Image 1 (cartoon, rainbow over the protein chains, first blue to last red):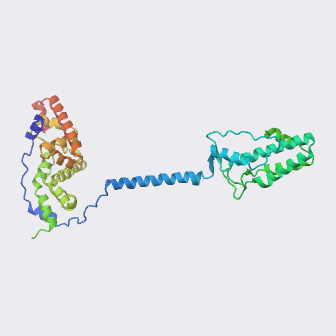
Image 2: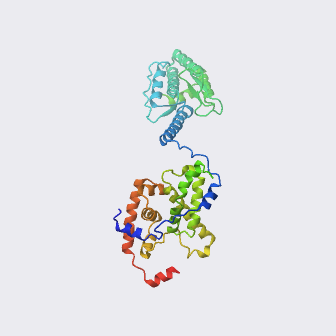
Amino acid sequence: MKNDTTLMRLRAANPVAEAPTIDNDALFDRIVAVPAETARPRRRAPRRMLVLVAVTFVATVAASTAYALTHWVFGDVEHAPASHAEYLRAQTILTFPPGYTWPNIHFRADTVMNRGGGGSFAVSIDQDAWECYWVGAIKRGDSAAAARAHQELDDLMANRISIAPAGASENYAPTGVTFPHLLFADDGGYQHKRQMYADAAAGKPAQLEQSCRANGP
Amino acid sequence: MTDTIDEARFRGIFSHLGEVTAYAARRGSRDPDGVAAEVMTIAWRRLAVVPADDPRPWLYGTARNVVYAEARSRRRTTPADVATAPAPEVQSLDPELDAALRNLRSSDREALLLVAWEDLTPTDAAAALGITATAFRVRLFRARRRLQAALATTQPAPLTTLDVEGT
């Protein structure tokens, strides 16, 4: 580079070719009369340490966010496999009417339900099945079967079905209930079912028949 | 008077006063002595951060900032003088080279001049600019090419034009 003609020309064009030798004691004394900063420069944290701190911070935030999402926000949420497993397990607990078979429910992969949702599904299907079984018993004049259906439905209403508190969110999860369990909204539906069963037992099965047609297997 | 340890160290830095003054003059400062005094005052105040082995890159880097601050202040305080006030640019003895240098970006120009006029090594010049030696070498290489290209296209200005510019 020293032989570069451009740089040589540049060197030759230096307007102050020689730096002057300046011995300015007065300036020196004036400058040092003011106290110099005694504080040494702060030692910079090694870059590796800074990176480590940054990575740790990001990881902590990410982990806490993930924890929050999975436990605090989606704590009572489950996906299709878990719901399906609950549905199958509920079948081993609930009593299904004679001659009826549990429908094979396909839970789509993107299904998200509240925890216990698969069991709730089974209770609902069981209830519908017993209603239809009762309708059939009435039509056949099978009073014993009708009485059993009535008893099974009363048991479901008493032990497997309850009403959510007024104003509860859709994510409300009852505590202290036995699996499987179905939650009715506080909209009079539970009372309607009770009345329907009472009417059917009193010889007025119209509502029960309608419910079977609408919801039955 | 016996120098303290800090004063003894600062005396070594202060010995570069003439070089800093020359630097300011080469960069077109109207008050090279004042710039150098300002730089030395800053060096004393921030003695802890001035490199002990060779303070010149630090001094030149600081002087560059002071010269630019001087030019900015001049533009603010004397607006009527804007048209004629020289920017903190180089003023070489070669008009053609002057024109070519003025057409360069300031970062390219400073890279060339730190090596050619301040006689710094690329490593020291890199320190003065606060960049890595490798980055400086790349910048110097490109600056040299651009200066060559500028010189190739710069026609010697007619004498009358030079007269007008010189007023």
